Image (cartoon, one colour):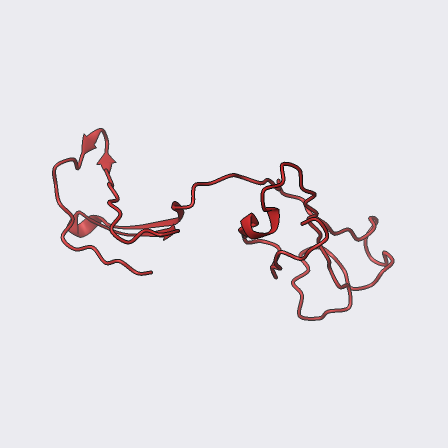
Length: 133
């Protein structure tokens, strides 16, 4: 961002995010560069249909690499949800969940409402809640 490295990510099939707030300061305009690098000689790098050889030899198309999914920036509040995981236990009519939060969340109240087929769980209390920071 503006010529400074904000972070890095290995793996081409998983999402990632970086908090750029400390790099942006109070400026209205910043330059963000997202770069993908794919070393063709790395034998441990997953390839998919790509080949380690630079020129085609058993295929009719050139090898290619790069960013092929949407990239976006998003302004989020200081306290926000960064992940949700729900695991249903149908036999016991339970849902176990995990909600990951960012920011100063100590003492915050988080409301969760579940429904199935239009029947809402409103009014039922969670049996236990654990806070991890």
